[in-house]
Image (cartoon, rainbow, N blue to C red; front, side, top):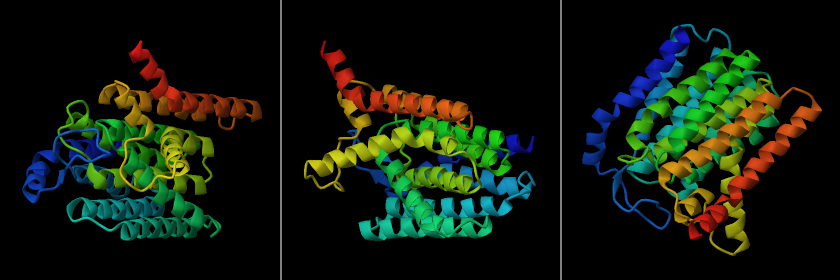
Length: 331
């Protein structure tokens, strides 16, 4: 019952708050102007991810206030801090702009501080601090790079949140169940505002929120002993898209940090698929890979190997999909 209350609060706040917040963003001039990387052609209001952040944070705070999370409360408190700080940084980027050096440094500091707090609270080795710090900062950027078409981030938050919530049930960690559920609910509530017509965008505040929520939860769960397959498999498609694109650009001698349209999901839209079709394809691949992790983790070496091979096959299909669909439409 209490889980339903926290989840419903996250959903309703994320769904309803844009009615109040969008007019304010319009007056402030927080707009997304199309550039070389954009998959849209008109100026659109961005920064609505702040309402999703409000939903996620409200759900987590309620889980503490109602006593739903009575064990490992400090983990949830640390997640609230990491998610809140990352969202604030993204909001500042949306509103005023932040230099690349300041942005990258701030993301790393948030990741390191959050992981250090988790390691201290959970009495884990301090050697994990740089690993977790880099992981959180990196996935904030991965989520930002992948937030380029309607629906893709909302669906990613929904699916990964659900998979992490199930992981919490399977591993008997209430805090993980709650963190996944409120993340899923808040991002699901954003979909009516963005999926299809793309009336508004999450902005950097939303993509930073997504990256920090997912990576912060994953780092905490890893330190708590949750199977790595539960945590890593749902992220493989996003990671493969981002890092394969980065390597391709570096190999070509391009400036990898400049705006571009070379991500797999962007090339899929260029091949003729709509935003909704591409978002559903990315999400479908994420879902089946994540489910493979849930079914095979801890089931023995043979099952784990089968899950890994299946995940690799899905990722390879996804990376090859722009060429496959381009040939299909050409025919």
